[in-house]
Length: 150
Length: 150
DNA sequence: CTACATGCAAAACTTTTGCATCTGG
DNA sequence: CCAGATGCAAAAGTTTTGCATGTAG
Image (spheres, protein in one colour):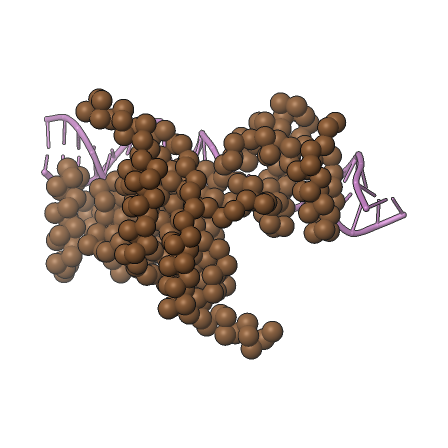
């Protein structure tokens, strides 16, 4: 089985956090890397099973929790009732615009917003560990379609 | 039963949206007004039952969904696995800082951040309907306690 | 060798739904 | 009067857990 540079780094990350590098965790990690950036546990499990039918859904849940605990991934909820997981290792912080029509997710970053957030935190004596900014609405294509219809 | 000015306005809002003003909806609305600003359906149901044991949880869910649909309330998820509801009628838009230690929620508003969000939306050809900014970390008191301990 | 990981199935939780009955407009 | 609201219980959906077994370090 070919091992990518990225996997090597991630496995190193796991062992540095005193976590066993198992066959299943590698499989799940590989599928996670190959999946779209915001997957649900079920979606990831489906991907995993395509190549390794033996892996159970519970293990996918446990492994995703593990990834979150050691800083490889983050949970997100975009309001459609599904919990999604996003790989955050070596990924610059960013925020999301979510199209409530076609469910497209647009990632963006804006340092001025972050700076203002820090300002607000200071004002409220709050120590920031993390933050989520989600903008809901309609993407360009869906707006266009609505215009054509309406 | 005493009826507050606020309830009168809200009932008006309901009927304007072609929704029946029932005994249960009034009871739930009253408890919602009296509850903390970010309640779960279960919490609200517990409050409601204290005065009106007959009201069912399903009705609380249905009524909260109704309130959301007609713009009186909004659903929020602060990452602790519970869906919370917040009254938004006549409330200025604001964002949240969530203390991950004591679960305190600090509300704040910042027009400069909103302006930058609009700027980003234009840049990505995105039509904003709504947005959520959540800052996670430790509030002043919890930071202080940690300092004392550590 | 042993602590921890896994698969499976059952359990736990949250939220929704079907249906008989009731009620606001 | 009747469309729609309610209570109850059952169902649906997601995530967690108990336990016997397997395996990485």
